[in-house]
Image 1 (cartoon, rainbow, N blue to C red):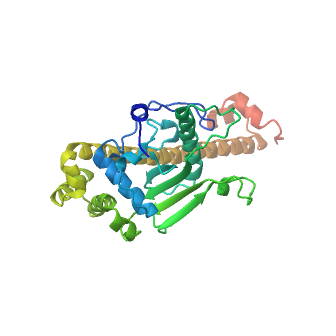
Image 2 (tube, helix red, strand yellow):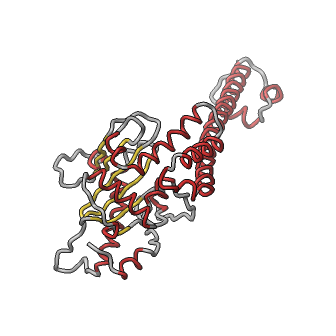
Image 3 (cartoon, helix red, strand yellow):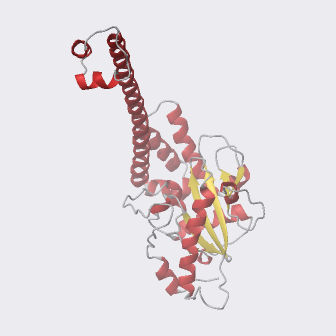
Length: 327
């Protein structure tokens, strides 16, 4: 399979998102930074395509060697799905979506389904077919792989199915979409790492940053030391040396954003707790004042004196004591 000049020109254009139901039709202008994973496997140059093809071969146990067989279909700026690390490409009549995740997310099948919906829409448009026509439109079969390297321990491979999210159980298998999660942390899927050198180099770099941070080393120093190590050991054919400044700044930006988001969540939680306590104290004080007002009124104390004693208005005293019989 070879690419025509027309296809290559078409693929070089950014594809913007559509408004999707379930996201309130709201589009955001926030541009997420590309991760190192996407930078390595973006397929935007010959070397990156070789790495992507190697990763595909390692997963499928195939042996493709012609990088021109790859047709990159990644949708740029798909902010509505917040899938900042997505990589999609067409090969061997299969539409592949590779994503990198550091958290476990059971909603991946639904997100993948929505993403593939637009991939197929673009594919039908590229074929210049009429979806309402009488002829069957042939489309590539889907493959959705999520590469996981978070801190939470999970098996080597996990499959999340769309049917697990159905409100009413449906075991018919008629409507299914699967996200296959592959754990690429150290000591997981070692065979995959051995058969794909670029993935092994990526994992080693990430592990060095992670181990340094566990020792209390600041993010900037941890990243800098990991980059120097990668350069010294010639990871990714000199890629780290060529992209040193970009990688360092990009990762630091991501670390800072994660820290900011975490601090914002924590601050929001603390403020919420504080507000809750304050509201509880106010409600408690109010209830005590009402109880005291009723007790004083029952014992024959005048409304005026109660008002002055408790700091409540005469109208409030009359309202809370309307059903109380005084002595």
